[in-house]
Image (cartoon, rainbow, N blue to C red; front, side, top):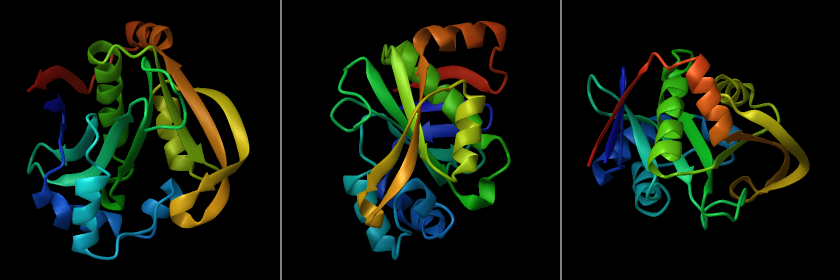
Length: 194
């Protein structure tokens, strides 16, 4: 399955994406702020593709110009998230290669996957969080319409072997529909192919 926006293709990860994943996931500014260590090799990135980036709603973010993976966006469904235990709710997670920051690409990808979550997966709520200090993630979530829900002062971050302050936001179907009505997305093309 693929989702399309004005500039992006959101598609399933392939083993052939390992080199691109490593290129962006090795950067010290990308993974640690999201709770995972930088990748150390292409073979590690390949294992991540096989064992982590394999969820049914996990997509490589690719530019339409070359279809090469530059980041990741995922709706973590019940059983793969600790933010909810409901089948009609999920968690949004995302990251983007540093080279592509500041271009509005994550907001564009986020708007499309949220639409997919509400319209195609029939979710009633989408949760999203960020660790204290991750201002870029906070801004993206605000642009996407998420509303602050709560803060936890001791969130375990097992891949980094530490505890952090975590902030939790939520977007309901009703809020999304109201936001879409008053602020229709200009960067999305509502097309899905299977």
